Image 1 (tube, rainbow, N blue to C red):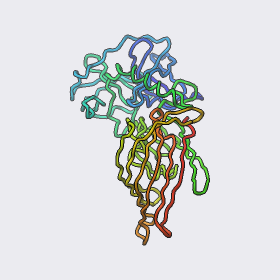
Image 2: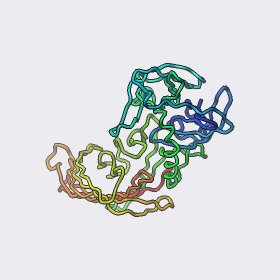
Image 3: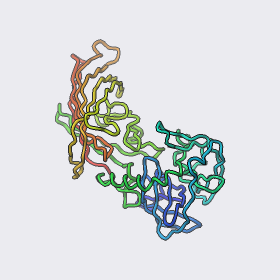
Length: 377
């Protein structure tokens, strides 16, 4: 049984973990979100644990457990997984140690490259079984149950146990990347959130037309599934930083006119280019965008006292704005220029500059803003 504990000693979440060998166990990263400490219990004996290897993208985390011994566990190879096979679920739902249930493998989800990316169960497991083990008839570990809540789209998806062999390399790489994160601690350290799931992301927004500054703050919501949600669902992203939805404009134009997926792209390369044509509607104003993005030079920008390597993305094009839908003169055009400095290490935009103006009369618009990342904590 796993207990995620906050700085005041309160239990934030409970779930399960599977012992993988002497002093180690694996569990769902979602269980550890916002934890200051982690405790494991077996046979009424409590063990202190620390986060050793995080792979938040796959929701698989390895814990290091003091004074704990267990034999190495057998892993079912991918070739042994057959749709329709019986799986035995062993875990600790709602604090009840060592419960046994049964399930059926309903499908094997693969990505475009043919790699296994999830086990699909025929029916969602019992609530509270996040981190529980899925075993085959030979007692080999086939997968781990995720911590997604009942009723969510990923409630019946499980992590393949073959990922455990890749956890050391992926976990160490994640730790190396996190070394550049300002003021972000891992679960098991004093007072910090789980890597990749910050509690607060703070920007400063400068309106250059009025020369006024204000804070733009994104506060993390309670963990719901594999997504990371801020400001009561106003901003939702994937663990890698890809934005899935924006429904509130906290940071001005940065939010209001954001392209699908965000202002950045994965695996950015210098001189890469793409076209973005899309529409957004926040605050009753519809915006149509026709932009061309080009990856420019690398640079280094200061963030919270640290030097962060960034890549500049240049956006050039046009915007069409319906200031008052259906009214005369409400449909206006204007040129659009934006520069985005994106940090692959942080997975976030560090600086955003935009200028646009167009239209005439009451439907005229003009935007000149700068947004800078202040801290992640």
